[in-house]
Image (cartoon, rainbow over all chains, first blue to last red; front, side, top):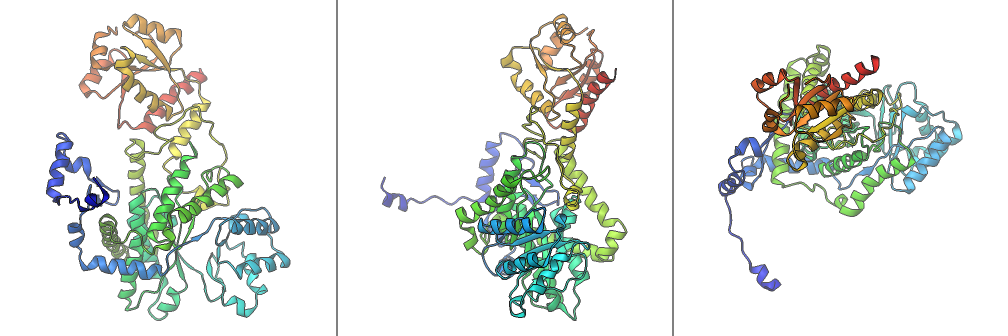
Length: 513
Length: 53
């Protein structure tokens, strides 16, 4: 067969029904819906296959959706916004310059460092801010850095770009946005995508007024944490842009673009097998990029303990690799038109808008928070999520599955001034606690084989993996055939806890009394 | 069995079967879908008690 004849090859068209029939046959009697459809925590059903016809049901809506995402994003690409850490302002400036030379694209300063600045240091910072956009997150007791604008000429100030979040009112240059719509507290409290999107709209509803709508919108930026549910997180960011357009329409306004700042979520980060955090970060970052982030931060894989220069470098490189290897930064909205992502975006838009109206019905964001209604709703979903990890419906590699009980676990903690991450609800936390506890206790455990290895291996491996999650390393018995042998094995080895493997038949044959 | 060890069995069995096995000191079962954090907490408590003794 030549390439020419290959080009002529035609494949017959298949209908969804034909595909479903083939899938059902392959499932060998397992129910189709229960096996292949997945219900998310938000109550949305993920289909095993999405078709053009399914997308067609939403028709014009999808076109508007794509348009909203494109006009919201405006330009392809995103800024790499890695946090720079240092102990003094001088060190910070050196580190910032080094980071910028190695691929960072924003000057990121967060108040957990609380640096003291003198005039010459601020002058040097000012010269950097003239060339690179800034990203400051400041607490009320750490606003010294804002004096940097005093060291800039009026003409240059008008070109300064970036975002500032401050607990206090900030007088910033015209192109620096200072009104943050922050969904990360909701995410860290265990909220779902619908909570995050609904809350973002309800905060916006409290923030903007009809009189000064455009001016306020142009001063607004939004922050999202991006978790590891790849497609859902893409759809989340896209849905926000659609919802923002709908929100503006309700005010009778055109939607000005709002920059979306994202960061990798620590909800799925674990202190156990921390290199897996790199995979989580890579996954979340690619989601953020495909979802249309404007600036993204990757938390280093050892962020939960104490990150070092090497891990911060790797974190930055996660973004550089995606940027340089995929060229996705040249594409405006890479997921546009995907049957799956468009459908999912549409479902999130519908559900989040309904949730937003529910919050407004409960008196708006502040009232819903004060009454405890919103907190309770978020907490209920967090309990559901936590339960899924506890029964391992949700896997955390190296933490609740494929754990290595011999792994030395780093003892460090997030710097206590990094409070928002310290208090974040994390799925791995109960498992980290178990692993730490296992180091403190002496426990002799065993897996008892009641048959030849070949017959019991699957069960034995399963139990070994189960116990490894708690840092427990059991002895493995030789094949045991009688109760006497069993008693002898347990007594001689001072076993305090044992699991019998061999199945019902073997157990019934073993005269246990 | 004459041992003081706590014994569990691998695999999921009907409640009635587990109740019958109780007389042979088989306490619980470990299987896919088992609540792993509470089970491991329970197991680790055995160790703590042993150290305290």
